[in-house]
Length: 508
Image (cartoon, rainbow, N blue to C red; front, side, top):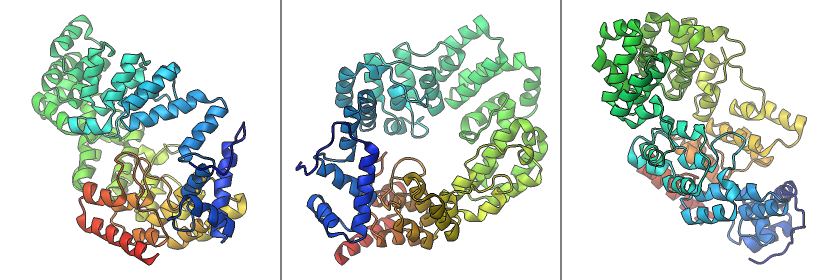
């Protein structure tokens, strides 16, 4: 790589970021020298230059293949070798690059006990964490990194409780069995139930099976992993300890049907629900399922029949109901819940929620008036942009100068998604990166996000303003066109994106 600049002995990452921003600004202003610099390293790139492309030019001027390589060298020179190695290891895990991971572990043994600040279980936590539910073997293969997990375990990585708990949360059966073979799982009733080891569960109940809380937890886990025989054994023990539960179950669905229902339903996942026991979980599942099914009558009837669902102890569940209704664009369910005067309306401060974020991210601004009965819209740049409030957006620049890049890019994404194109143009003129890796889940482009919304107007806006249509997402390494064809199963959209890219290239 030809180099035109040299790094100082103690480089500043912030200074490098500012250099990249200045390069992008100078090119946008028509500076001939800046344009020539970009052309020397990216001869085919379209101008003006995005922030990402400006960083790439700068990295190559310093003799590095890309921005990540440049920042890695900065970390090394500043003595942040372990953090650099951890970043490299995380990338190797993501890429399923087992040989690279082995090399890093050999060079940096401290990686085996390295922990990030968010208690995610270190590198082993990353390798075992799941992008989504991993109960299906094919999904587990794509959503987790079992080969990397095995390397880490065999090399002696620290196994934190959060890593083991995450296996139950994600239902990653293959990893659960791996941990069992390596002797890494606690021999508790919960993990024995997850494994479906009927004999071991029976033996543990014979030893110490009088803890109703532990039995209830194990029963729900057995249902989660679809171990009907284990669940039946645990339900019998729970009823022996709690006669009221027996009266409820035997007087309604019956034990087998009760178990089958809880095995079949997955509505409570990611819903802030903390049921006190199986009977409470049964009713929560029914109410949440009504949102999925669009059955408003069943939804209201369930909340009226079980008033405790509207009480202070279920504020988290009530929040989850609203979030799920927002995702599914069921405003009438939110209104019905609030009309029943749930404790959520009086809870101060309001519980944390993603409801507003969901409304803006998935283009459902018509739900904002009902959501703001509980959560006020924050007074910040992204939310002003999402609301299409151009005067307030301009005010943020007048008050604080240049906002942080993440805030700028989130504001751009929300303004485009919600079709506030005047706001989006203003943000692009003031430093927002049209090629930002912002996404509602994992890094991708705004164009990727729009694929699942069928938002052709917003896609056209981004394409006309030069978004890089070759950007690939973090998880699947696919372009937006690939998402349309293989994830959304929308061949018409895939062809539309392909034609839009072709026409843009012809017009250059």
